[in-house]
Length: 454
Ligand code: PFF
Image (cartoon, rainbow, N blue to C red; front, side):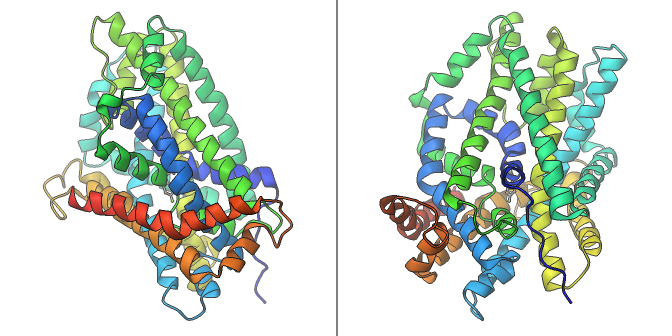
């Protein structure tokens, strides 16, 4: 006889696991530099509008499909629309998760390496300029591969213990630690002389930098950051008990994800400003993806208590990356367990092997394989591009179309309100329903088209 499907043990555990999926490299590594490029607070404002109008309704729908379907993405769609082609949206989601995990584990590996380096530097009391060695490190033919596999192995080691003992327990510990640590780094950053200029930059909007591209970036970032469109929320929701309030949980997760992104900005941007002024330079927070791995180590090496701040910061980065990576791996693992009838252990090994091989190629694209191109992109950029710009938006759009047009309105509202047991004002429930049915497909198509042609 089949074992009954696992569920999360508590509401807090479920919320922290979902928040763990959402809070990740996207918040610490991507959000601050996107803000730096797109007018600071102006970007935050547009991001929040996109989040509320477009992403929250899609997230509610993904949650609802997962809980009602009660299975991995492929089977959940199949149960809600038996025998139809819609289940292939679920398959696309599983594929997208595997692809994201394959490049995500490379950056996760970098955070392992930077944490290790920060510890070595702190304990050997040296101010060695490891900031300069980032390019050398990522182009090394074997070192980054090792870190990528360590990171992926760590993720697999958590998942193998299952939903309650692995995902839920570790997310609770890691997300709590993450908040405490990042607040400590923020305090260090804000107490540096000159830091307030950075705060001003973050909260005084500069609309002159806002373009159509800003709106598109804000939408894409909100998608990636909330982990929607690739089955993570759906899979976690399939482990959620029927009495949870879907709308409240989704709003809570979105709120904490955004709060965390802003806090991460406060940990990084004021410190960059303070150290630049100290050196008589113009602060540059639009340095792109190098902000965290190139600019920040330089900043840490020059500030008092910098080695402790560096250890804490890279530990936070690693914790955030791991809790997101487990949600990505769980999508694939749940699919292998339920559709290919393998044990959890074998499913984890299979996922480790496949994503590990692709991850190695992604990592090598910064070194020995730098000349190898897929559609004129390096392997890493190819996976980043097709997932963030194509698979997630298309997945999200199809999901919204499914929820809005294939599910019956009565069933949608029934699941949203737990059969009328959760008191959600009718106007609010209907607004969400119509945002999903009409606004989300159009809005997401716009991101998709824009990214495709830009
Ligand atoms: N939300 C994660 C982050 O912000 O880093 C990344 C991510 C995880 C994207 C899971 C998509 C996903 F399904």
